[in-house]
Image (tube, rainbow, N blue to C red; front, side, top):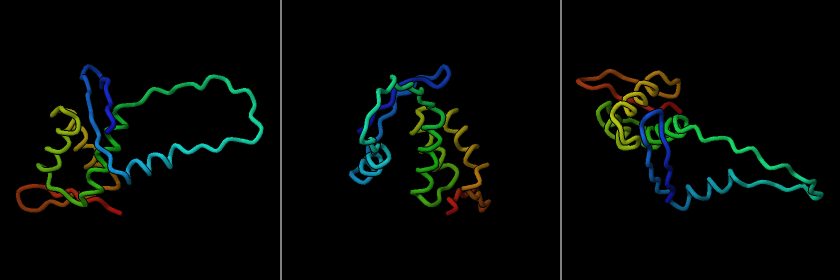
Length: 117
């Protein structure tokens, strides 16, 4: 389990992510760093602040990618659950609508959001 706390603008964020073994393995693979045989003195690394908007954006894309497709209301409900906020959920929904990786199909009463491979 991974917990992210902070704020997006004036909104507090307290997000808990549950990762399965495969997720942890992929995360660990991303963090693998090879060390040179001769190590030179290294200055203290500059810690780059985590951009919460980008974290939520990646999580929103992953949610739709894993689902394959969702109706607008279902996707909004999940995004609200992800962000803990209706306004932030709607912002992500609009961002997904305009993403090149997403196709929005108008059908019936609600739009259908599809992930494009």
